[in-house]
Image 1 (cartoon, each protein chain N blue to C red):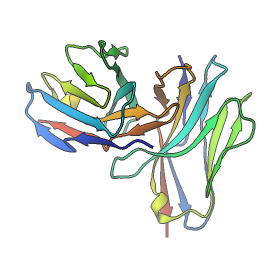
Image 2: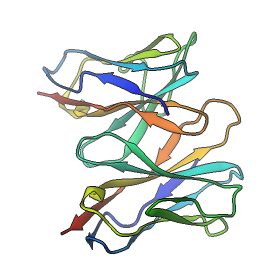
Image 3: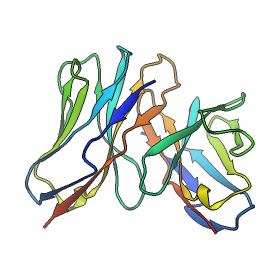
Length: 112
Length: 117
């Protein structure tokens, strides 16, 4: 298994500001994934982060709103930019050991 | 694109009884994996069980087992001897076997399971 540490676990932010979420994996992984879980909803993939290249974004998500960094094989950050109340969600990072995905503890973001 | 459908938004079961959660999926892929994840109120996503599409034998993990019907594209989860700690949201998920490392997941909408004492 892989252990993924994600922080912050929760935050309350003012609209118009930005929040950066960090994920640290206990070993090297090729791909990391960022998901959004809106209140009472399922998980939706935001983007896939590969070390050394730009992240690949899913339909409906853009780099200006959700910039991602992947400086090495154990770490990634997701920034939620220019936040609005609609960005209030749980954000989860994920990494794989082959075809088995492991998740961070999630970040509960509330935008007021 | 793949889709995953969970038709039961909520279910409840008495402690020690058996419950089955339903999941269907749609894909044109032949090689893939199916998963059930559990999300308790702590928000942590916990892998319950995994099924490889090429395997005919249904996966089993202790009290958890699946009924995988590839032709019908059905993947149900059976929880035996339900325990209070099984109370959680359960997500069915699909992963295409890309043969590399780009193993992204497509999730169903989830089923909220409540185990009653």
